[in-house]
Amino acid sequence: MPRFLHTADWQIGRQFATLSPENAPILADARIDVVQRLAQLATLQGVDAVLVAGDVFDAQTVSERTIRRLFNALAGFPGPWLLLPGNHDAALAESVWTRAQRLGAVPPNAHLLLAPDVQVFEAQGFAVLPAPLTQRHTHNDLTDWFDSAATPAGLLRIALAHGSVQGILADSIDATNPIAPDRATRARLDYLALGDWHGMKRIDVRTWYAGTPEPDRFRDNAPGQALVVDIAAPGAEPQVQPVTVGQFRWRQIDAALQVPSDLDAVLQQLAGVAAQDVVDLRLHGALDLAAHAQLAAAIGEAEGRARHLQADLAGLQLVPTDADIAGLQADGYLGDVIAELRLESAGSTDDARTAQDALALLTATLAQRGANMAPTRIASRIAAPQAGAAMPSGGRAALP
Image 1 (spheres, one colour):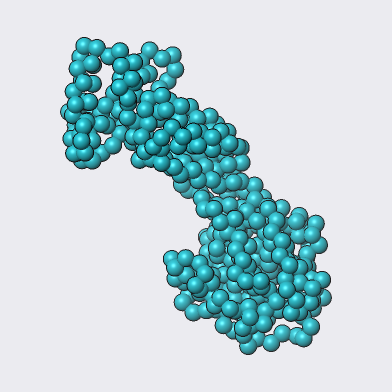
Image 2 (cartoon, helix red, strand yellow; image 1 turned 30 degrees about the vertical axis):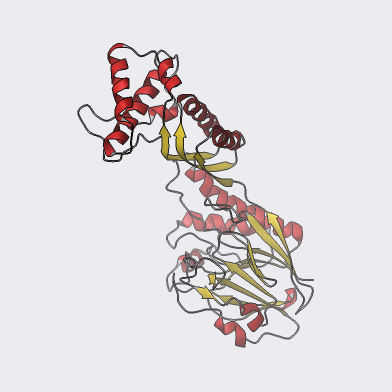
């Protein structure tokens, strides 16, 4: 029974420029590491070939070192690797693929599917129909030729393509590199291995997206997997088994904080952050001083455990309660300023919002007065307006 390992969207050479200089290289190297794990998995599973459905490289301009590292990572599996160009590494006249060939970096068992031609692997019992991208974006279905392509009798018809199945993925995804949703049926394919969608997705019994084997974005669409595919004979239904191969888990925590239980839920999620997590925290709503300090401590602890944590708290407002302000024991001039800001903060005008921001900033600063530690991360990131300068219209004292 022929067995395949289906994977895609490695995007080797991705830089993660928006992440910290400490973490970006580690996450970039993880993309090479996962290819090595795929090679080990292919050997362990005894597959007949590895199907890589596009975007092997992140860009045409990756370094020579990156090219060599990628092909060296294939060494753990001696069988055929079928590598399809995608939109990031299209088979241009001069491309990352032609550079790799000139460098002599491509091992004999790595088959570059640079042209829409049938390739026969008789010993392994299958023929391959590839639809390589020869430019970054196309508006024609490059899999059309599958329908009329002849393959030797008795061999499985295995196809690889990179693009968007029309009518299945979001309209914004479907704009370029279209693929007919019934292509496998029309072309009598035993299996159609797809790339471009970075999550695992079943289109029909013979058509699957494998997704990227190492997560690279904050989207809950089952990334970090590869597919082991068994096909008993031509015409038989494929048996597809997802296998987790990713090292890092990309998580997004997005919440509105309106009542105490909302904060409790966020704190619970932050408490579960581990060393392999890449976290995007997005919060909005309102906090009093006690909740503000609690959240700040939880973020600091989670950041220390996580591989990477980034926070967008621009929509989160510090709103001190009457008890908070009384506990500050502010008297004299400060007491007068607080009382005036509280009076002016009522309502929803621009002046009222400016007063709210100023009150939040002042109370957060006073709450730390006399403390034997640095101000909390959140409070320290509330930017104070310069003396004599007005805050922008509608501006909020943003928590980072």
